[in-house]
Length: 128
Image 1 (cartoon, one colour):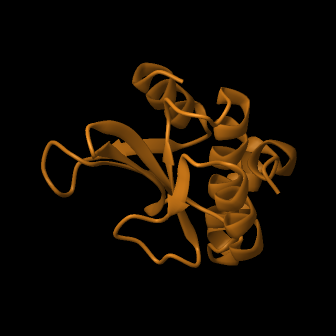
Image 2 (tube, rainbow, N blue to C red; image 1 turned 30 degrees about the horizontal axis):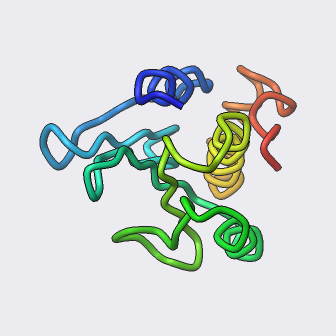
C-alpha cells in the first residue's frame, strides 16, 4: 500500500478527518474527535498505528512481521503496521475498518446514534 492510498482510504471513511496536533507529523485521523489512526514515518518506513481488539492484536503480530505492538501507544490495544511490508493491502484496509469501528463503538450513545442515522450501521461497523 502506498502512503497516498493509505491517506485516501483513511479519509474515505464516514466523517473521518485528518489533524496535525503535533506539527507536520504525525497525521492523526479522527472520527467525532476520537483518534482511530495515526500515520507517520518510523525507522525510515511509513507506519500507521491502529486500534485493535487485544486478542486479535496479538494474533496479527504473530502472523505478520510488519505488525508490531503500538509504537508510543497502549501496546494492548494498538498495533503499528508498516504499510509497505508483508501485510496485504486488503488486510491493512480491514485493520483500518476494525480500528474505526472500535472507536465508534466506544463513543457515547448520542454520538453513535448520530453517526448511525447519517451513515448506517452496516457501513460504520463493517470492521467488527
